[in-house]
Amino acid sequence: MWKILVNDGMESEGVLALQSLGFKVDCNNIPQNELNEKLPFYDGIIVRSATKVRTELIDACPDLKFIARGGVGMDNIDVEYARQKGIEVINTPAASSRSVAELAMAHILCCSRGLHISNRELQNKDSFTSLKKQFASLCEIKSKTLFLIGFGRIGKELAKMAIGSEMKVVVYDPFISNPVVDFEFNGNQLSVSLPQVELADGFSIADYISIHTPFVGQPILTKSEFEQMKQGVIIINTSRGENISESDLLDAIEAGKVKFAGLDVYQDEPNISSNIISHRLISKSPHIGASTQEAQARIALELVEKIDNYYNSK
Image (cartoon, rainbow, N blue to C red; front, side, top):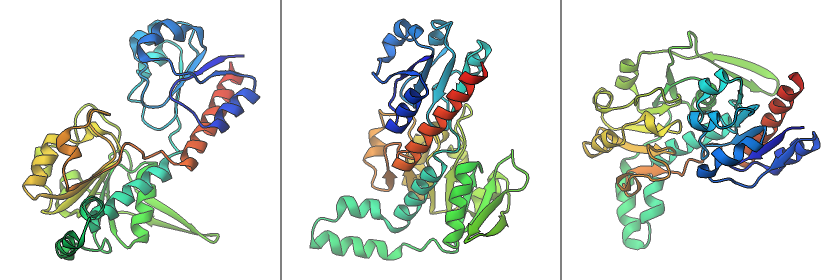
């Protein structure tokens, strides 16, 4: 049986499931700078976002059978190069969708009511009175327009929550011709078609913009895009930090174009810009979109199933 290195951690259910199938599992983390020397002794590696599997490491492991990523994005893996070398590359695109979408909605609600500011600044009766006056101008999310950039599994889950909150949802996704959300209530099913718009049109009407796309080599939101948005828009990013130019975002916040931002991802994790960290108008979380017990359990078991299927196909 294959010997597998779990280098960034895995839920115990997944480790036990792999072992029950006969795989030899090593959960001792190997530092990145030692992988070239030690990974060749394994048949496969399971990573999350911390470990990088680049061309140099792939070349050092000619007998590697698979690279598995617990999560959706595979920016830390040179996927095409690995596949060219005959290495199977596995990820879990469905397992964490609900958890990430819930975090995006949490940031939407947090920014809408200034909770990130209250949590930091409410300390005594003076701040109580001051914050109460400041937040009197905030608003509900009902009837507001949410613009989803990207309409994959996470975008669809967030759309369900937004529609349930009576928001208006519009979509930009060049890979989808008819964005539809499917609901199920007590055995009854309902499908809702959503308007699809171009980026510029979405920017002009959106009260909230939430990004749900992989990084494709350049930011989606830069100075020119911020200039097209409504005054007082709220920006949410739970996708990839590189999808937003952080310097341009900060400028847009200072100019009042962006009212609040909710960020779970950053350009240089974990070395987050001090200007981002300290900004009172940015709601922040430490890349925890998939960090729920339910998502991690689903991720682990989905990885086990895919690894076992690949092993049995060989």
